Every structure is written in C-alpha cells, then in structure tokens.
Image (cartoon, rainbow, N blue to C red; front, top):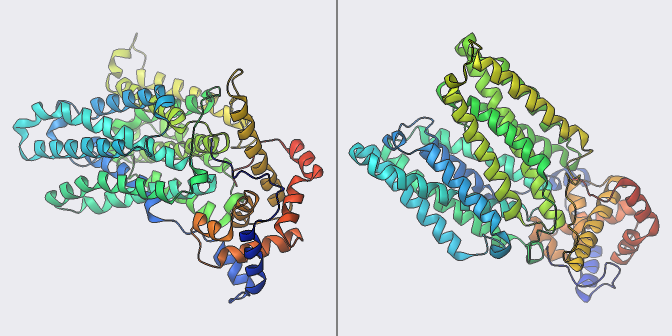
Length: 516
C-alpha cells in the first residue's frame, strides 16, 4: 500500500500550489502548439529502467547456452539452474510478509551480486579448464539460480511501482535491449564475452538501485499487503504457455536464436513498444494476446518433420507467442500491485516460480517423449493436440475479462485490515475518476498522468521529477488540461473529481481504472 498525501482531495491549495499556478500564468509556449503537443507525448525513458534486459542477456549467454557450449552443462546446467531459481522464488513468496520488499534491502544487492559473479566465473572456468567442469558445475548452477531469482524479483518490485503505461514501454524496450546485447556479444572473442557476462549482473543491480532511488517515496510500497485472494487465472494461463514453450525449447536452440534474442521476441516487443509510444493509453492491449494465441497454435502445427524452414518458423512463432504473454502477465500483475498495494514479491514470486516450473516440465516431457509412446501412437502428435486444446481453452479466460484492468479474481479477504483496504479503495477510486475524466475530455496519455499527480496534490516540480520531463513541460501540460476541462485552478479540478455526477458515472463504468 503506497503512502497517501495526507490531505483530502478537496483540500485548499497550499502556498506551493498557489505559486505553481502563478508560474503557469507567466509562462508562454516557446514553440508552436501542435509541435509542442506532439513532442510532449514522446516519453523520456531513463536508461536504468532498461536494466531488466541486461539480466535477460546474462541468462541466455551463461545458462541457456544458445550459442556457447559450456562443459558444465553436461553435469549441472539449465535444469539445476531453473530448479534453484524456482525454489528461491517460491520461498520469497512464502516469506513475503516478513521480507516486505527486496529492493529496499542492501544485503539483497550484495547477496545477489556475489552469487551471480561467482557463478559466472565458475562457468567460464569450465570453458578454459574442462577438467574442472564436474566439480564446479553444480555450485555454479545453484548460485546462479539463487542470484538471478533475487534479481528478477527485485525488478518485478520496481515495475510494480510504475504506471502501467510505463511498465509496457520499459518492459518491451528491455526485451529489445536484451536481444541487442546478445547480438553484440556474439561478435566478441571469448575473453571479452567473459568480461561482458561478468559485468552484466552488477550493471543490472546498479540499474535496480538507480530505479529504486528515482521512484517518488509516495509511490513506493510502504507496507505491501496480502489481504487478497490470489489471481490464479493469469498465473495458470502463463503456466500453460510456459509448458508449451518448454516443449519447443530444445528445438528452438538448434534452429533459431535463444528465447531472449529470437526475432520473434524482438518483433512482439517492438509492436508493443511502438504501439504504446504512438497511441499511449489508446493502444489496444488486446492485440497482444490475440496475437499470442494463433502464434502458439501455429508453432505446434508447423511440426519439425516438415523440414528445417518450418521448424525455424515454428521456433519464431513459439518465441513470439511466449514473449507476448510474458508482456501481458507483467502488465496484469504489475497493475494489480500498483492499484491495490498487493505485495509484488508475493504475486511475482508465485507467478514466476510456477511459470519456470511448467517450462521445466515441458522441457522434460519433450526430452523424454519416447517414454510416452503407447501402442504405436505418435506421442508428438498426442502432445501437440493436448497442448493446443489447453492453450485455446485457457486463452478464452482472457476474452471473459473486459479489460486488462479487471480484477482477475482478486478480492479482499474478510477479517484483514479494514483501514488498509479502505485506503486502497480510496486511492483506486481517485485513479478511476481521473481515468474516466481523461476519457471523457480526450486527454492524451501524458496529460492523464499529469492529471493523476495533480489529483494526488503533487507540485509542479514534483510532477516534473516523477515523469522525467524537462523544466516547464509540466506547466504546459497543466495549461492544456485546464483548457480542455474548462477550469482555472486546482480547487476547481478537485471539485470536478469530487462531483457526485462523476462518481455516479464512475460506478456505472466500473470501479477499476484502465491501463492509462
């Protein structure tokens, strides 16, 4: 649950807010209005929020082994790495009430960084000294899995503090960054590959720290709560897609790039990034899952025994589909945590752990598929039919939800902290009213972000810091908002947001805000 500003939304303007209003009257646009509006819609993306892509590149190079065959893989490689990661994630979720948040604890940075550094060194030692592979493989995989689990959960916590539109931009951009890093490192000589991989975990952790420090205190989870039923719908959906991806994973590495550098992954990430960049909150996120379903079905219908080309296309479709649903699930869960104050460590610890477990199961089923042959029945065809049926059936869950901001089965648990629940509902109501007002008055995505911060009684200077926009840009946005709403002061804005008519319309539209 994030901190409230203290005053009610209808409170009088503070001296600082009065000063901000006076400054607005004194500033005149220095560029034509149309050009200014277009430029203001382009978001500034702080580079450190893209550090998520750095750890993805590390995973593929060091443990997925998409293009480097480390001798350690023969003794304890990706399977041990994944099982350790799953265990640590689920353990963190179980202890989330005690841990609260990972990214606010200095010891977690040191622990994750140390584990990942030692793991990287051990893996590369086995490349130069293969005789040590059997001795170093197991500890390297265990330390790597534990370290990366902590890093993944820290990034999940960071993204849960952001507006969902920013999550979509930063996460899709991070997927592209990961692929670019892998493409670049592929051209390095081995000593430089080692140096690059050694620096990746530290760089990603540094980005987590910078991201954490850049987030306003009011948006940080002070006391994340678990007073909710768990949203199993999206988790089970991602688990099935993970299982389907695991079935194709072995073939993907032999015919295409790895899971984080595949052209399919980059394509889907680019579609989401450009779509959100151009359309903002008007971007239809339904495109993501409507694209992912046929791609996954196509990945299984284009069976490998039709030739290398179809096998290659099958791998691209599988990667693209999995990437689409990973973006979708990140948006859904981060949005839940952002709106309701649910513990991101609890949500993502379970979701990422279950997802990785089903990918592991899928990989094992494919590797040992011959054990499933019964009475001459083609086990590959049987698995294909079952997976397609499961994927299609569970994907229908998405179509039963009206929008990504639906509750997805989340409900308050009776008997828990009523005051905390009321505070969460109050904040959610404010977000919903701002979203409704933005839609009615045709505000841009950036203007809606500014509107929400104004409703939370943030000053002009604070808005500029939180949105990473240049000095004076926030004032221009506020002027545009006031003009579109036909108001002149924040008091009028508060009265508009508090109006009974708006509340009545908000109830008719539903209490959950959109992704904008």
